[in-house]
Image (cartoon, rainbow, N blue to C red):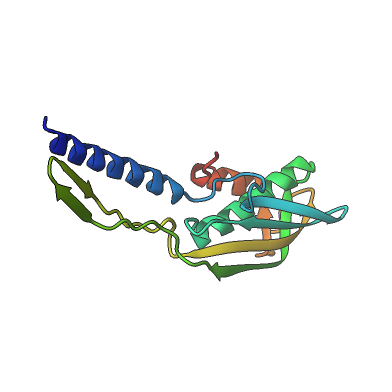
Length: 169
């Protein structure tokens, strides 16, 4: 292979590698304790009352953030030895973040026996650029979930129904 051919092949290889690295940046927040600003955390407010949060990156959908919040509520309820929880208040806020990405232009030069070539890749790291912060206040209870309470959730049922959607690190 000539020097010029080798230079083009090397540039193309770098461009492909850069694309793989950038694609890896656009990953939804896994179900995890708060790390680097993303994940879940909670605070105990009273012996049977908690405030739970889940913050997702811009590649995490609103639905995922809300599901992870409910899953954490179910986990926490069971960890306290209780059976169901009641959502006292909840909300999800979206915060638009500027898109990030890399753009490299195409160009080249040549002269004598040397030539160079640049290959461009443009990408956006993230979904729609919105980070979702889901929050809920819950109260945990023992016993059977009251059938007439639409704001009450059986912790074991929530955990079982959402388990397949949970992506861990």
